[in-house]
Length: 336
Image (cartoon, rainbow, N blue to C red; front, side, top):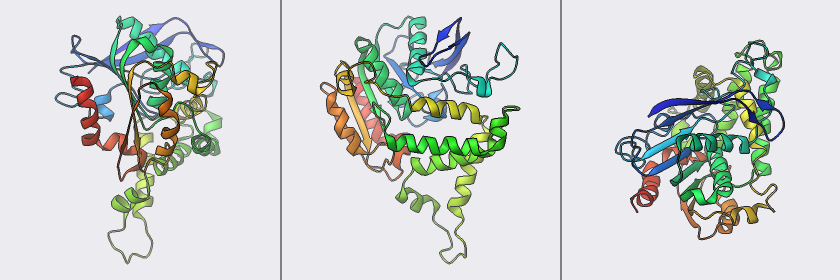
C-alpha cells in the first residue's frame, strides 16, 4: 500500500480550538477500479493495515490489495504521521506534547471524511472498524449513511462504557504517575508510565485462557512464576521502542471517553437507526472490554443488522488473531 498525506489549513475541533494546519497521513492500495474498502484503525496502529492486520489485508487475502481499493487514514493524535502531540507546534517550534488540544472521536472520523472527499470517493463498498476503529466506523456510518453499502463493526460499541472508561483512566494514571510525563522536556517523557499503561492494556486485551496457553511456566515447579511478567514488560518495551510516545497515548485514550454516537442525535438508539448499510456486528465470546452481552443490546437497534459471535481463546485481541473466522465472514461480503 502507498503512503500519502493531505494537509488542510485549519481543522476546528469539537472540544474547542483548532489545528492549523492539520496533516493526515493515509495509505491506499493500487486497485482503484476494485471495490472500495475503508478500514478504521485502533489505538496504537497506523494507516497501513498490511502492517498491523497482515492475516487479513494484502495480496490474496480476504481484503485483497490487488483486487480492492483499500484505504486507511491515520487518526489525528497518533505519532504515525498525522498531526498529534509529537508534531511540531508552529507557535513554539517544539513538539506540542501537553500543549496539544483535546480531540474527540468525531474529530478522528471527520479526518477520514476529509480524505474521502479529497480522493473523490462517492461510495464505499465495505467500512470496517474494530475496537476504537469501530468507534470511528459506527460514528461515520451514522453521520453519512448513504455513503456505505456494507459495514462491519468488530469488538466495539456505539458508546464508551463505564467499564472501558475505567480501564482508560487507569492507563492515563500510569502515564501521569511518571514524573517525566508532566515535565514534558521531550518526547521521551513518560516512557516508563507508557510501559505500565501498555502492560495494563494487554491484560484487558487478552483473557484467562489465553494467558494459560501462552504464558504458563515451562517448569511447573519453578520457585517464582515469571513468564507472564516477562511478557508484560516485553510488550511495554515494544510499544516504546516503536516510537509511540506517552503524549500521543494520553490524548487518544482521552478522546475515547468522548465516544457517544447518540450525543446531539436523540440518543444511541435514534442514531443507530440512521444506518442504512448492510451491517454485520461481530462479538468475541472472551472479549472482556466489549462483552457479547453489550452488543446484544445495541446491535438490534441497527436496521436489518446481522449479529455474529465468534469463539476465541485470546479475548479482545481475537479481532487481530482469528483470521480464518473473519475471512469466512468478510469474503462473502466482498464477493457478493
